[in-house]
Image (tube, rainbow over all chains, first blue to last red; front, side, top):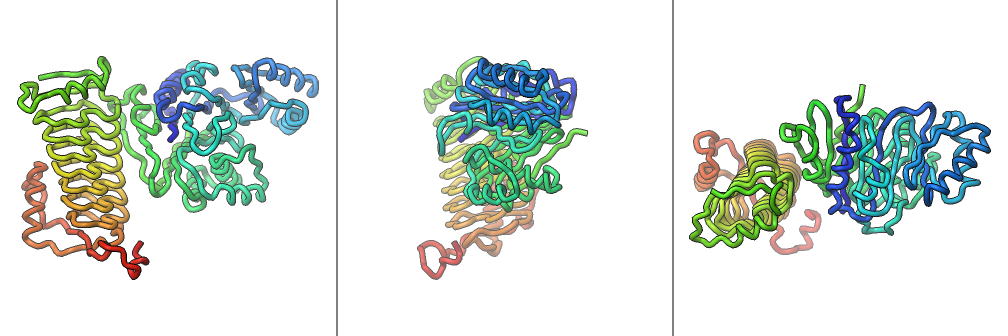
Length: 297
Length: 229
């Protein structure tokens, strides 16, 4: 089943409320996905690249950051939130940091990289996950979230969405893909790497690859309609963009609302009822096989 | 008149109260506020009452309806009036997919657009959509009428039985075994009656519609038809 939500703010006055609005949307989708939850938030830009790290607990993450500082011979700005820590490192050092963490910090994963994007995900009820990371206190321009009801694979943090395969790029998915193994092999030949066997990660990788080759977010999603086989409603974020697409059969539900202040997505309308001005919003069901995309200017 | 605010009291209590009504009840007019997209509002009604819902509803609203008249002043999610037996359901906004699915009778009127699979497997309901309908509408529809003032999406009437489909606008494509058929006087009369029931008499002329129905080639599986699947 699964529930997905997304919120893209047009009015900067709402940015301080992004986290609290998104957390209400996420929690409302608990019935569609009580096993795990995750979200991506596009907040303030870091000095360099923001890497979201995930570990077993705060202590192991603090150890990893301390180790990193000694290896780099410099301080690393880190913000800890439960099992995740966001570090801000100079872009030129990102490769070194990933190398040190991969080789010398067992149990620490890099969940995402971005100038502005941070990703948090854990097993458990969406309300508990949102509270652990204080989603309600986060600010930003846009964010997406996912509540998972696991049907095809185990309830693990690795299987939770969003998935990120590129700088500031993330994707949440309701559905299942049937050609993900073949597509993963094709993308690996193009130089992409995948952390899991998950079908959704392949969809994220596919979009990263298309955009790397010069496509806009909208164009990448349009080509996904012919290259990805299966059931999907995708909600996608980039540093400045937000987009939605459903497969041509529209197997998975989707409702959108747009006002002068925001664009919002929910698997069900229930997820949108807490948004300001929803009573006068333009509420519509996105059409199958049609890409809806917004960009910040 | 009975009023019920779903932000103040549980939906199950509302449905229980509606189910407890006797056919000769004096509580014939109900107003429901605060639906906020909740699922299964006013389902399984079985009394000649009128229910008005102020706002957007979730899935299966007015499902299994019998005798009651339900007006939704908003949009409806998946499966509005699914399996309706009789009565009247009027949605003043848009509806999501599978509106009127499997319904045996009654009238469903949608002022806006309907999503995919409108009237899927309908078995006698009359559906009037003032806007357009999505793909795979009237899939395996067995009886009843589907009237669309706007356009129809892909694969209209796939594997259709005896339902009649009247479309005023364009049809993106017809499903397997669905064909356009001649509009004769009996069809214009039937369509006029449905438009009249939906409050559209005089506003829209039956002559503007085309009729689609079953070619009756798929009633029984025949290997020669395999290419049509």
